[in-house]
Image (cartoon, one colour):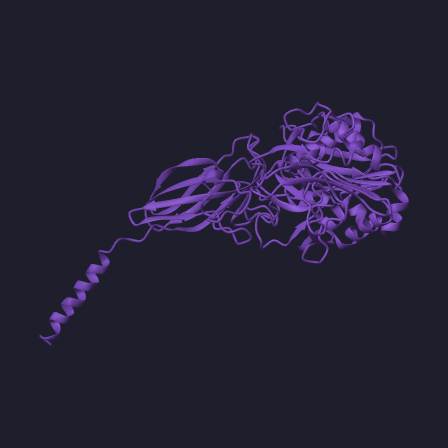
Length: 539
């Protein structure tokens, strides 16, 4: 027994040494968030919807927790757009900080009251807990994974149509989500210049309907659908439903009016509605990340009926479409406006060729179904003319089963490289870091295009880039390089504007730069487009 005592003392000594080790970092237990009022549909333990309009209803996010040790707790409001290599490294997206506060062991609460001017979207609340034992961070997790910190949805007015286009007289349904008590709805036709923005609602949008007030008090806790029938005399075009509240919140929902029967005009302008949704970073599932494959590879499908982020205007709408629509109106062009869905609904390329001489894709026509590609290719093979006014067209194959669009594979990997139809293929992107002028190279080969522009071989014009195309192995025989931006993305990676004709008489133009149409109203591009239109709009 006496011999055992030293061993016992040694054991006690080791135990005492362990007790003196550095304590662990403090932990937050029972972490959850509320809006201090009734939840909106979809809210849960880690998601709360707020509307900071000062009416005392859902104005702030309340974060509750318990600490296992005294600690300082700080909060950062993080805006996420795209995935980062290190999900915790979101410092560039911090929009607001709350200074760390000292809390004792037990229950604690932090309150974030967003400023009224903050953009409606979801934000991740990153909490940093510091104590003698170190620190822990609760917050930004991986896209598509359960959130590691509270997520707060700052609600504006979200509005989205169930379809991208409607024919005259057809009943149109729009889903609206907001907790405003009353709403004012009004439809505007795009009227040239800058479409009415959140700050300026009285610019160039032409009102097509009187303002209608709707009592929304019964729908403050969940989205609801509104159905209306459009008058039959609206011309084919792009429209926006504007939904506004008395507290200043505004949301838009784009709407294409297609003709009752396709082919009323011999030129069709196809707006890239599927690309609009692929680049839509609206966070519907409330994990703090936009629901797009541009955010996470875990996403393979997107909902085509989602409202658009940024008050309802499609991502980069100004770069892809807006200025070209202005050019159409300023020059008096009469066209049929279609969505991707409308092209997909055409039974065959033969029918498309019966109805149109020219199909124009003014925007980023990146996502195309197999049937769309079949229809447009057959249209070209029958002598139909095509104009692609952006870049990176017909790149991805998608499958559409409403309301979902699913990314399948690159058309190149499916044995149908885009250059075989478009004339050029996607080269790459520098996200607009460097944009340079086109240098004319094809003035002698296509004098009709440059007539009246003052451009000749060696002349330069504009500043373009972002994403670019260039000729490739699949470019049709006789493809002409009209202009080039040499080495825009590095040695040998140039942007090329192309044109080719087929034995059947088809004429196909590709601008070669994503933002080419953004200069449509400027010279010499305006005249260049007039020349292109004159040649391609003829059968």
